[in-house]
Image (cartoon, rainbow, N blue to C red; front, side, top):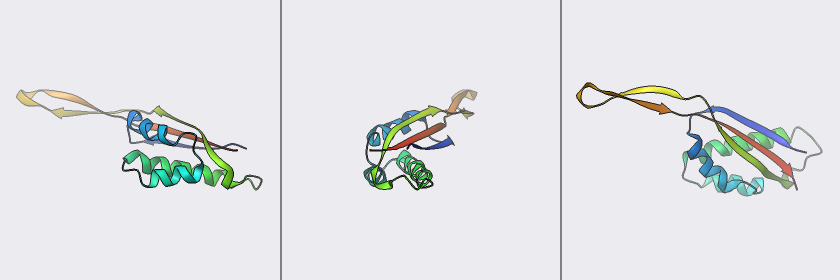
Amino acid sequence: MEAKAVGKYIRISPQKARLVADVVRGMGVDQAITTLRFMPKKGAAILQKVIESAVANATQDEATDVDKLYVKTIFIDGGPSLKRIRPRAQGRATGIIKRSSHITVVLDEN
C-alpha cells in the first residue's frame, strides 16, 4: 500500500531541495527521518516534515505496517517564482528570482 504526501509552495529552490532528497531516496522511513534530523541544511527540516506527513497518511490504513515503510520516490518540482528588484550601482536595478518548490513523497511497504 502506497502513502503519499505533497508539500506545495515551499520557499526553497528546487535545486537545493533535490540535494537533500537524493540522500534519503530509497531509505527506510526511520533511517531517513534520523538522517534528516542531523543534516545541517534548510531542506532537511522541510523534507522531514513532508515524510512525517506521509507516514501519518499511511497510518490511516490499519493494514499498513509503519515499520516496513520506505521512501519509494521523492520528486521536487519547481513552483511559482517571486520576482523582486534589487538596487545596484549607478541607478541600475537587477532582478532577483526567489524560487519555490512542490515536494512529493511516496512511501511503500517492503
